[in-house]
Length: 75
Length: 93
Image (cartoon, rainbow over all chains, first blue to last red; front, side, top):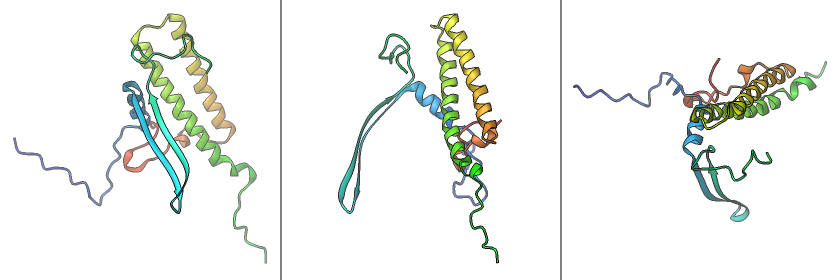
């Protein structure tokens, strides 16, 4: 089976968009669940001004990831 | 000589792009909730009454989005963002 020649990436003609709307990717991401954790410090001229420390779980509610409130919750 | 109007922004049109951006975020969340609701209903652990209420709520949300767009002179397609090689934010059509 001849090795298929790889699709050149840096072509000049218009590269068609991937075709999957971003909202579908976000949906699948939510379905699998993702944890975002990180630290961000915004500084000006080496003077740290703003600190953002992030530990976020982003997931859809299922058996493994139950909602913290029994009922629908306040929101 | 009349001073050329550098910025011919009518008050009504000025906020339109901002409203469009806000409605885009709302539409993104609405579509996410819609897809998540479908996944949750597929699991089958919801009562029929819950499924019924989810369905009607999502339908009313969709109508509300159309009303909001009409109020601000926008079309639903305007809410979509073209992310270049990444494709679009929301599905077309």
